[in-house]
Length: 65
Image (cartoon, rainbow, N blue to C red; front, side, top):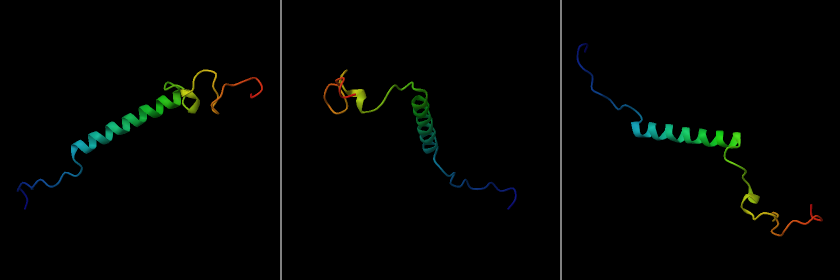
């Protein structure tokens, strides 16, 4: 059997799956870096409230702090 070319077998994972996996890993890494460094900004429920409003829904007064 030496000297005969071997039949190409299944190469395993298709190239598009590998590329997709690499892209997902890179995007997740960028997201994690942005969160850890603070580049992404502040997040949380109070981010979308108007200025002066508390998480309970009403304006914050000096007696509620």
